[in-house]
Length: 333
Image (cartoon, rainbow, N blue to C red; front, side, top):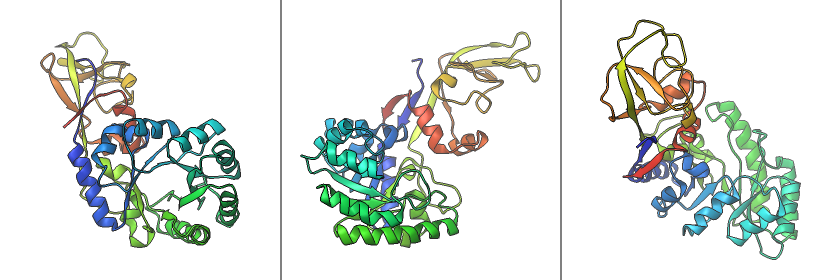
């Protein structure tokens, strides 16, 4: 097989979810956006059907795919509807939409006006990605109620969970907004903590926690520890072997005189970074030249240390997982 192979342990994901729940002590909202960080959203959702109180995805399309696959639990869509059609489709499939601005609220009110849409209110506590400012949450709640939108939750997100001062500033801002949401919608589920918030401490956990990266075996840096384990192992196939000839090594002048070299069938076309970290020289689009001999056709495990690979490229395991798992052939074990 020429494709990258990913062997994904659903039991490991279930175990990671259990560790999160035990640490948090409140219900788990399992974040399976972007195809569960590349691990396969449908498979992960079915694996966590008992563990998760609800699921969270990025787009209406992702939510509809889960519904079509038989996922019956609540599904929160993080990205606000960007047109009336999305609001209508989301409400028709029983998805929980996000209200993050007056414009998004109006779209939901108009696009799903005959469907009693369910929604969470996003609060901007300082990340400045989505959300109503705390001083505007009250008016958003009143407008949502007037429009017949059933607000069943409210949330925000830490932009730097490792920074105690930033956490406290956002926590205080969310508390103000939470009071307004609860006053208008007493049964609303409030959630502030993602994985970093869970690790940071109990006061950030509110009525639920919203975790993604910990489910797949990784943690944000500098917040705390939890013995989660990576759920995916990646393998590539040796597609060539031989003795070095001439002056190159992949897309680069050879740094030394090589003896045996072999090629793995992987490249930057598969989401790996072109420069460094997996072989000698720069990656080709679909090939990686490595030093040493290896039998033709052998399956070789790659990226055994994703955090180190991510750090070397100035990014996070989140990005690496989404990039390299997206096109891999997935096998569930």
